[in-house]
Length: 174
Image (cartoon, rainbow, N blue to C red; front, side):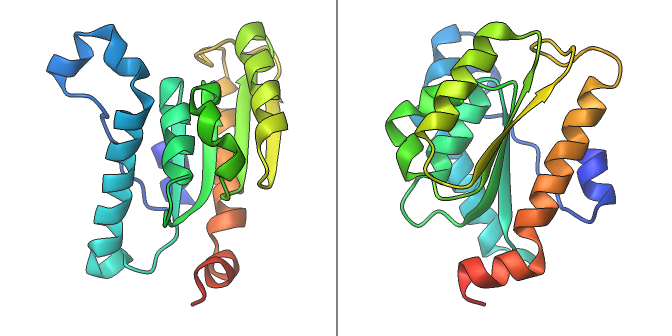
């Protein structure tokens, strides 16, 4: 994923949202407010760096990370220009979906029936620009040949559309 985004000129930052000790307790994977707080802290850190102070930021989350990304995007004052959820559980941000303003792309495999249905419900609750893309023949982890590459292209195109110079200028008043 990162290489496709980087080749398009987008910077990337990979985060482990839990420490190894925290990962030992499966319940922590579903502590969406804590995970979102860590994403928000990372976004604030990016905007404190001299080379990226005015750069637009996009969130990419997979599985429960998608719920955390949407929760973080709904934080008051969040400066996120776009969100991409891959095979995610954006339903875990249920309480905040209606307040997400960042354009949101939901990507789900066609053979991941339960998550596909959850994402359709999430899409109905979003009030921001959004789109649901279904990758034909893909399961939850997108392990099928070409599936992850398709997700990477969809994410790249979404981020370029919403994080480009014109989008950033209109969103942040620069």
